Length: 398
Image 1: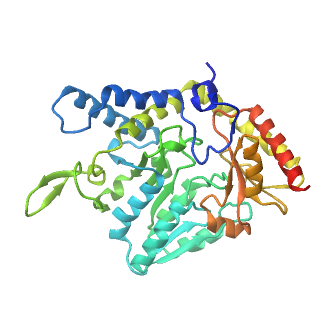
Image 2 (image 1 turned 90 degrees about the vertical axis):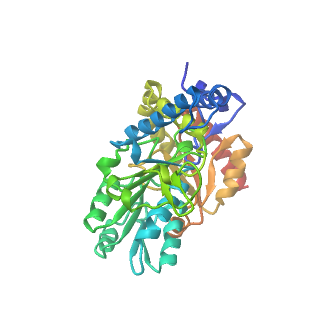
Image 3 (image 1 turned 180 degrees about the horizontal axis):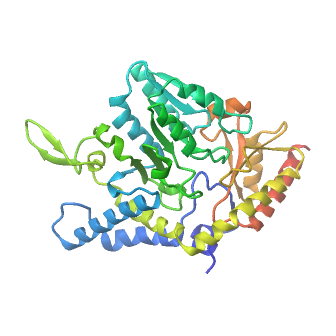
């Protein structure tokens, strides 16, 4: 069985899906795991007295342990379940930032950030009357390391950085950036949404305090995410929502909370999503996925070469350190017009600012056409895309 044949999405008709940075398609094994839960395992977790619920709780917590192992965390209890990367970052801002950011503190983010790792910190800085600084980006979207260094000399309280750019695909030197931030005494958060399915992640090697990612970017379901929290700062987080599941004891006089991470996991969790995430982990650790990943670099280079042959196309970003994302503009043409014409030819790409408006402003553009590869793409997809792009450009110049 081929890897692509495991994805029911591609059985519905002619489509070239080149939008995996937005969301990846789901293999049948992930879909089946969620269906099986609702058909045969549907109960909830923790505190139940009957055997089915106990078995489900064991499965649920084993997936937490598997996630921890996958990202290089020694302890399963460092993993908090969330709705996704955006929810994880907002949780960090509320559960940690609300207590630890004060007036005149400095928060630093990269100029390439997705809005999810930009706006929460910007708004927290406004709320706390703190300072908010943005690291400059170079013309290829890489980080201006000299500017980063100058901001670290100001001893920021928090440094939030992307592992990889969602808009350009650039892979950033997160270990180096985190090490430098820690020398300044900063707490560090890494947005790993785009990295998690493409590059090895070891949070303890990186040394970050927080690491956030989503299931749907790694062939899992939507609505499930992870926030890793380093042991060093776990005691600095406080509950931000209240209700069931996170309670140890309640009386009229006071409430006692369950230990970390449970006091940050309020209410009935997304059990189906967690089970789907567990199946996605198994998929991306499979031999078939590993073999597909080995050919991804050559496929990406083939795409870059084909685009370079089109004279009016300007490719952005660092194409030497990249997760398989190509962002490009065409002189005097609208990205949305190109996307609409590609759509008519059954080519799925993403057009616009990619939730990275500060980056687009820094690059002097309003948006790009973004092509992002997944494990299921092949040379035939690239050929169909290039043919469709050439046809689209010829129609636009009539």
